[in-house]
Image (cartoon, rainbow, N blue to C red; front, side):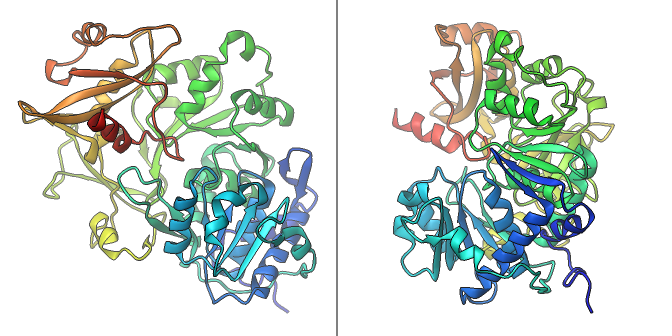
Length: 512
């Protein structure tokens, strides 16, 4: 007999099988009033694998998933992994044309979707081998009916750990989204390290806060079920509902992005006082820079909770983490390199930069992507012959080895021949009492080549002028860094990961 068939290769689904043996009746997933024990999750994962095999798809053909955060996401991702098919996560907030582009580019052969999202997938289903629908049958066959017909044993396939389990499309802050090939090995090792660092394993309770279709959302939502913990599904972002889940399910650890923290703070002291958050012991931030002032509020409101700030990307995985002991002492930093991660900081010619000088960050680790789907040129442009990868971020490393993100190389402004890093300016703008958040871009200028332009979201009832901003910044920044134009905006455009899409701001400014 064979025990743990296929278990010698790292696979994102293996942890579910392990804990179905070790703790079969432990709750793995809480989704509203529904729960999945590890035994149930493992059984349904096997049924998904058999269901996919029954569709007659070509070997390793991608299968798209168009769902919000819900329990089925876990079993689908794991079942596809057991069947040897990568999944293509689709953002439910996409337009129909965006869905069509990714379906076409990825060559997905089947689709599983929430029936409520049929309208944005309607034009993409022609030619697919199969469409399965949850909570309705507008476009495809009923998922639960099809699943119930499948056997419950592990199919026992050996899937190479270097195969992609997922084709994750980047959010497209600089152009058309690219399909990032992420291997079982890469992601499984991140499950292990994340579990160690943030307490996402056996006996621990977390929440899938960020959307599961996003790289970080999937990583931090799925890690608990891969490592024997319990995850509660936040169906739709709502700061009060998040805090209610923390209280109801006695959640201990959560992942947030800075926008989440801003919206929690906006609930106000009276509302925040309604929640018992005493179970919470760990919060880790990612996706966008956490402004120093906002971080200080987080540390005061969540007093006694360990606050981490990590840095990473879809392509490079987790690169670094600032741990709680250094949170105040090294405010503005994203910490030391992550487990098994080597960091190199170089100038435009590829030469190492001195301590304290800005340079482009490259990392090498087991967490890197396999490459971009159908785009060897783009893959080669961001990787080196000796296995390092860059996402174009400019950083400074201090004499203790702490990394601070200066800005994205592509966002750097050159005004009068001098480099201006937008994040430096943004950090100071948000110190203004009337400003909620800000983004800085460069715009063409006949005299200076580029000028600094600030977009700001201000508090209700506040009015902020360029003169007000100038007076605020004069004591804080060199003159060449001070914005020459100010645009007030209701909300900054953001992608699925919460990052500000500065290409949209540049287009808005150019067309104004």
